[in-house]
Length: 344
Image 1 (cartoon, rainbow, N blue to C red):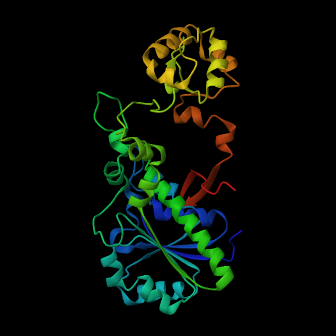
Image 2 (image 1 turned 45 degrees about the horizontal axis):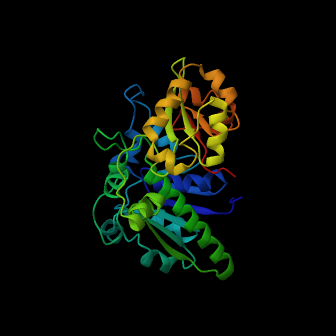
């Protein structure tokens, strides 16, 4: 799809590299510039305790760097710098997450690069915006934008999400902005400076939790897996064989069907408002019924309703559908496997 597209990736860690990977999966030439002075992207060293220390890449690095040509360079070295500039001269896109001061020092800003490539799309990722010099990793944004405060159990401390979701969301926002810029370039021939901040992406992703506060003055509290607006939604129940299922009953009609399957007396629970008001009583009643049968029984009975089986990753990748999404590649002599990001 993008076989004629050339991208220079001046980005490390996750959000920027994931953006580059999206395009590489679709055939674009992605040249990843890594810092020779730090032995490359820092995530090369983000290894699990059982990963071989001698490997040039980690599983983490492999998750975001598929199909790229990697160059280890010292950008303070004139020869290495000129090599990068020569690549940028005929590139369509540059993806960068340098600090503003570093980009200025290295002459790798949009203002400078657009003078040597007027049609360049320059996609810049920052933590809190170009005018805020704070360093930002995903967990910092989870804390600063309310996600951690909302996440966890009511009587426990705030909890971060197990995936760097703000980085992942930022990558989606960035690739969408790049695609829009490419459409504009096709029409006008003009390049564009795109700026995406982790902060803005996190804020945009608060969706209903933000409007619950903005419109109703409701400060979301830690509720475990429960949903503040719907019940039973996110509520988990243990089966007779000690497996967990999670319900996602999103309408009164679905609850009516659900209660019929369970032979549950729905009186007093007919509406979502009633179910929210009596959530503890409702969950206790459902729990007493669910625990009487094993997972296989409930999977058959609830097949036409929205529910999920809580699985670990070994169980997840036993599903043939999950394995259809895998991509394999040898990086630095290491056989790597990852889940693809371009689902088209």
